[in-house]
Structures are given as C-alpha cells and as structure tokens.
Image (cartoon, rainbow, N blue to C red; front, side, top):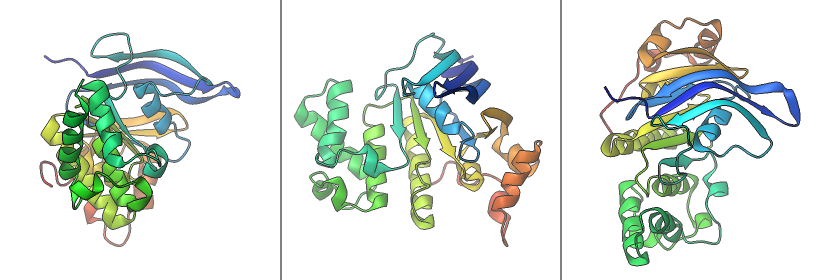
Length: 266
C-alpha cells in the first residue's frame, strides 16, 4: 500500500512577535498521492500558515514544532520541483519586469535542466494547457498587459512547469470574479487529474472546496476542528463551526452545496 505523500505530525507554529498566540496548534494530517484536500476556514484560522509550512516558505519569524515528512523522509521537499505553489495575487507573485514566458521557462530551465530553447517550448506548451488565447503572443507579454484571470493562469503554468507531485493553491481564486473563479477551479481540477498531482486547496469558500476536493479539513483559530470526505462534511457536518460556515454560504438555492461536483470533468 502506498504511503502518504505528505505527513504532518503534531505541527504547531507561533510567530516571535507573539509567542503565546498559536497560528497552528497540534495539527496531524496526511496528504495521499493524487489526493485533492481542501483546507477551509476564516481569515486567521491558520490555513495559509499550513500551506506555507508544507512548502517550506514560512518566514524567519515563525517558530515551528512538530514534523512534516515528505514521502516518509524527515525533510522538506524541493520548492518548485516537488511542490508547485499558486498564491492569491498573481500580480505580486509574477515578476513585473519579466515576460511571462521567460518566467515559466526559468522554472523548467532550473529544475528540469532544460536549455533555454527547450524551456521556452515548455512554456509555450504550458500556456496552451492553461487555455490562454494566442499563447505565442502571451509568451512575450508582461504581467501588467494581462487580465487578473490571465495572470492567474500564467501563475498556474509556472507552478506546474517542473512537474511537481503536489500543487498548493492558496486562496488562488479569491481575488477573481465568480465566473473566472469557476474557470480556474475547472482548470486546476483538469491539470491535477491529467498530471496525477496531489492538490492542497486553501480557501475560505466551502462551496469551492466542495466542488474540488476529495476531503475537507476545517480550521478554526489554528486548530483542525473537522476532517472528512467532502460529501460527509457538506451533508452531515459534525462541528458547530462547520455548520456555521455552511449556513453562511447557503443562499436561495442550496443545490450546489449538496455534494462535490465535476470530478473527472472539465
């Protein structure tokens, strides 16, 4: 039986500016190869801290206790190669003075040992995969010349350029309008399925999590208060906080919240 891709054991994180306040407290969580796991919770719940911890991107001010094991090894994975990371704001994560094709190609050049011609071909292929129109033109465009949704597609292309085994999307749709959100979620679902990647999807939106994830973990004030299959968490939540999150998202038409949809489709 294949073991977990990532094992998080008794993980606690505090920040030196306030060592008595835990951003994460005693988290135990596994991510299986190819699994789609959503972490949901309000701002300040610790979900983004968990994503940064898994990726080895916590700032120097973070004090970490516990362990994160990558494929059974007590070591952090190689950023960019083993893990691809998509941030909330592509405008901040993309280099404003570098053509987007060059930025994607740089990942392939660095982590796949491709020469620049190969890496540029890889970038063009990825721009097609993330369904950007006229990818040959986009290859030479700069971030400010693209829309918010287009920039996020570029950021996704860069995140998967080295063929990572885990893709982390940290609030990757929250800055987008509803229609573009749905398109990005469908794109992420397709890419993860095609490449066999595991997905850690961080969001405050339980509806998006239900649509995309196999399992949902609910975080509140640095603690994991519920974990289960997406259907079970949505249909029969056990924790009062999860019920409040569901209540906050149920509008006039609650049908989309009944069960995860779209698995295996685009």
